[in-house]
Length: 168
View 1 (cartoon, rainbow, N blue to C red):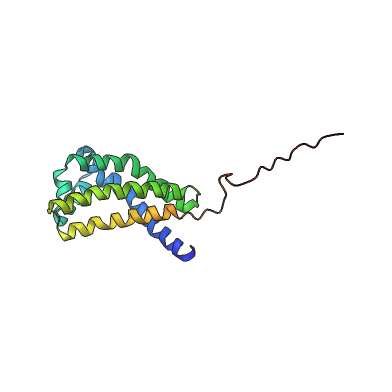
View 2 (view 1 turned 45 degrees about the horizontal axis):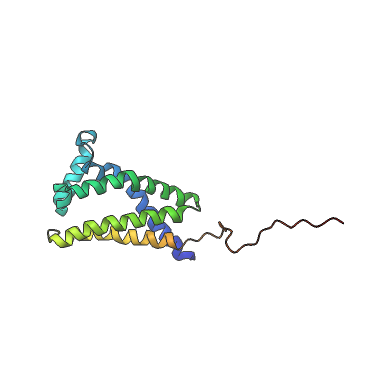
């Protein structure tokens, strides 16, 4: 994979690092009590909602609240693990990347389906959400194209145990 693989890993690193920060501080405001966040963070989210017209975060339908809980409990720890996996060159990075990507693509399919189907989303709002689908697909592809050279299984390998020779 070479240089292309490194470029993909850099892009995913930036994405996972930003999600490790954004998920609890910004997205968490959708499902957690607002009193636990400082005013600067709640003001930042309010400004985003006003600037982009994000009706889903404004109205907080039940499926969005559920997806945010999913993000906080499942995707946020995976994004932290993926940052570590990239930096440390861990062999399990492909697996966690695949899990994150598949989950993100599924969540984004529901969100984009609602936005496009309802006709409420502006082009600007869609352009804010569509890249997340792209990063999810990129994470799935990165997880499927694992660069590990270590053999983890014994399928197709012969046993190294030598049979006993008969003593005469």
